[in-house]
Length: 72
Length: 257
Image (cartoon, rainbow over all chains, first blue to last red; front, side):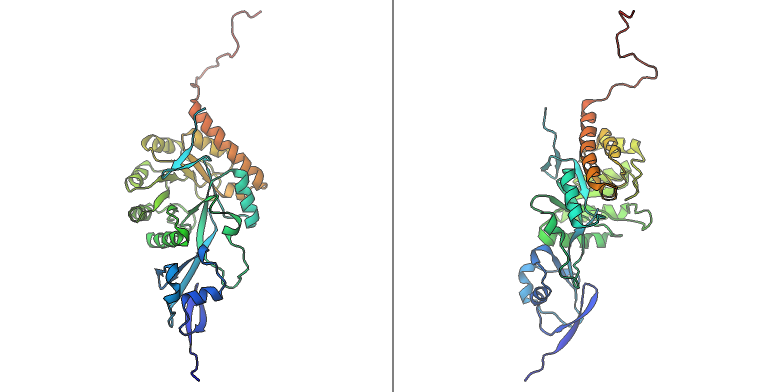
């Protein structure tokens, strides 16, 4: 049986271990984040939320997920 | 009476009070204060989602962006790159094009960094954003922002969160005279009467956060600001009487006994 590899990424500034070949869509679903209320950036590039299924995360990727909070 | 609406980037608003959503005890209090203020536009900040606490409530659960216009800001940005990145992300959240640009120059006084602000205004305008710009009360710089395509000029009354009220009325009057763009006082107001003063100077609106959020009774203060803005606006439109040095009796002199 093929062993599933794990990789390290940086999610919102914190290190996270994930399964190799995980898509951004999988990650967002796992985190239970409502897609319509966030924006996602991968290695400083804003992602099209319609294409998250086709984007696989790689080792050392930096992903930022942001939303609106209270501010003046 | 003629309808007197605030128009920003071709969008009509009945309220001339814009409120910030920061510094409240919780989102429930914030939502109630907005309701009491009658504001139709609220500023919001863009920040990282809390990954560890998935149950943390979201702002959108309390303030419906379909009913209240969200005005994403760039609070906490100290250069153009950071501000552009923030607003591009804000747009991606749900198509927000009307934004508040705020590039700060100093962590202590929170005064705007105008060179970076001007640079950002030019880029954002070209990208199709409608940019409301937080800026210094400098008429020359305000003119340059207007030429760069800003959709509203938002000079400070005093440093952000200071509550000092309008420090340079002369400059605000000069800016009023030179621009037809919406002129909105942003930052530094401390109490409701400060809003009336801003409106009597001819401003089109005011943006208030800390003065409401940090009042002992935020809901009462929200109501006070709502009425102060209306009073100031009506006073401005009514045209004040002339000032005289000496007294002028209100009752007729003729027929006194």
